Image 1: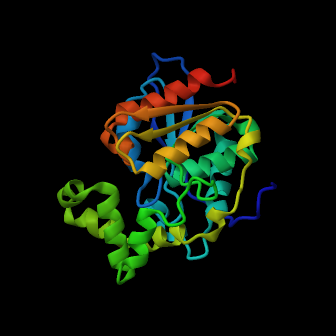
Image 2: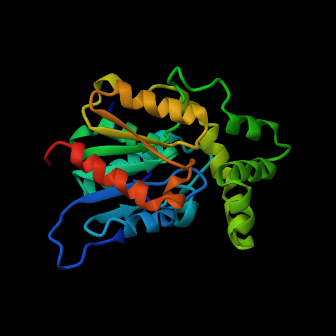
Length: 265
């Protein structure tokens, strides 16, 4: 599938961690955040990868790239952006959380020569037969009385009530304010159309899920690991959907494990 034409202005790739002069490692990983998130949430993961150059960016509509978002953005826009990032860091491992995992898988299918391996943590591959007709979080959004109520309900479900209540008021307001982007991503009909062939994906894929995550997240992730030619499944014990926040060392371990199964670069 050839790259689509994309807007000339793109998000900016930023470095979360660079190894010190004592390290001669040249390993690089690009971290791709999910919905209702931003690249800064990976800082504790980056700290667990001292020998790696850790790169990330705020996807369109989020964080510092909020002004680049628009109501017509679809998955391919984010895949195009990752492709541009890979031009700057060819041969990187790409580790995506949730929606970011879907972006990573699509990019690997389109440009396998640029990707060393993929880490996909609970990617919402909605066109696979094991995804429910209406997932629980989609139902929350549908039943909410307004867009703001939908975003708050989604945040409470993803973060959990305890984490939601300890968030500073400013952080809660900012996340709710960015909620339009979340609703755009969830309503994107292109997510229901196959965009890569899992049976013909040449890149090693480490698919991971938390043992406390929703059943369909775990099931789809296991199935991805089983059907891609070079797939491995890893479960993070005691983790839910936001494992990069609650279990950063284990999430970082997924990156090093993907490096171990990847082809020499």
